[in-house]
Image (cartoon, rainbow, N blue to C red; front, side, top):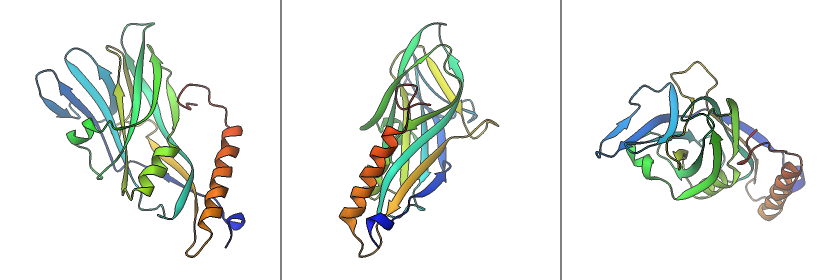
Length: 211
């Protein structure tokens, strides 16, 4: 089987773990303090709230080239002084299938920093996470973790969590697979070519490849 015959596959994943993590100035930690209907990132003088998602990668063959990976969340909450703006960062990490306060500190692999206003841009928001999904897959991670943190004080953004009836987070992954004994180099080249094609035919409307 050659690279030219390889077909793209797609899987759409739901989180196996998701939570709101809070660390406060008194040294206390909380998970889902107010329930899990809203996963929010917010920073102030007392509390630092972060949101975490983890997805199981069991359905993704290890001999795959990721051509596209998109993390989608439904923004429906915001807070702060009207007209102000804040910055937020998504991080990727190798997860373990469970949300815990350990995940609060997993900020080694930054994906994208974006700006959100008060009020925020409500609705479905998508982030390009292709490179981090490929990196985690290559590293043998069984779970892909994503951590949202606030960099600016007093601006909150929140998206629908498992306790909400609104659209839930998802990870949409497109990939091509290298068959046993197949042309790995050729297929990787085909994957790169597909990435360039997607880049030319995608028009992100906001920073961080948000649409």
